[in-house]
Length: 126
Image (cartoon, rainbow, N blue to C red; front, top):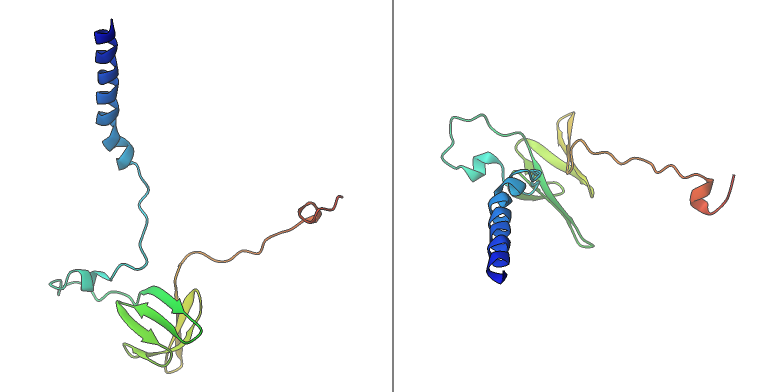
């Protein structure tokens, strides 16, 4: 009887292991904002259109503010292509070319939303 239980347990284990690739295949794909642009990742790719200006990272400390744009570290006043870095905040970098301004966001498509607080959130009652 112990041998039969062992065979059943091994069969269940084998089935669970066989099902693992299907569970992993359904994982959500996340975009890494720090990943280099395709032109840097594939240096031999010459025929492709030039990538858009991509903000990849921001570092703010008490002594400096820098950002990584298209794989290059830039500070306030530095040039990115023909544009000058005029502002670096926690979530965006502002570039200026003549009178034209371009805002690069760290998390495009995501905006801060105000929190609506009612009386219940403050411990009060209606």
